Image (cartoon, rainbow, N blue to C red; front, side, top):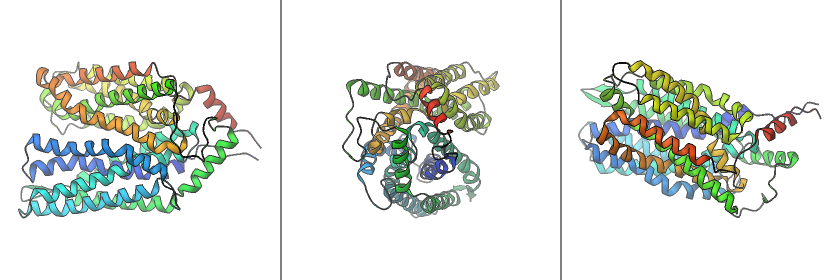
Length: 440
């Protein structure tokens, strides 16, 4: 009989990615709407509202590793990750709901800023609770050689959340008496978050998925000899493994410093450097669309090249794209499409691989903690890079952001070379894929 037990289960990958879809939908709305509320409804200065917006990254940097490690220690009928996913999502939706109420009062001129800020911090705190567990549940549900493909689906679902908010959420933003109102937009986000979470609860059985993966690991001989999965003590890394972990996390830090530093200031680059309207969304949609289309192909490229080489190819493409953008002028703005296309082709190649490389260094029982390390590096980049990039912009203008992004991604590229652990070699992946096609 043909054995399909170790074939990639794409349907399961979609279902276990639902918490990350919900999480991304929240942050898409938060990053787009909250700055407009703070500046437009509460009349905060750019400096003050920027400080408020940085609070989520500071909170995340502190609590992401803690909540990730906590999810490794939980045991119950719902599993390790699901309890924190549910509590975090429920708290985030509640905070967002009360933010809507306070914002409505602000529009009517009957509310102060402090209540809105309190509910904002509540929602941010709870949503930081489920990021590491929301990513860890995806890795928990698949044997190690399949984690890159599963992570590709996770990134695809995150991209879909961005598109959904960009299309539906933006349509629900309304103008009333000259004031922009976000009630309908944020209500849609809460409803979509609720439905996504309910679908997750109805379809995902975390303990069963994890037990199936454990049995497959034993059957395929994929258990690390140094690991006893029944023991939940922290992983003990060798000196070389620690070096690889530090280099991978350093590469993650710099790749997202470049990526987020560029995109934080991209709109002003568009308006002030290229003299284009902020409504010129073609390049951005090209980048998002190509990136989403490349997610699954990137997983198959990884199966041929391995995680490290695929990441290096992706970083090289992103560096090239950023350098190319620095050559775009107001006289020939259309050339930006070429460079965005190159960058978007490269982004998925490292985006789907860096997390699994971090996880490969730890035990399955510690995956929440290691995902916490990964997202702490991403969050650290988000805290550092907007302000750091602004120093160069003040000195050289917005045209410098392409060079800034390229230098950061080039550093990330260099940091990957000493990495000796965390990869899954293509010959092993091929042997694994071949083993799934053998008849019993």
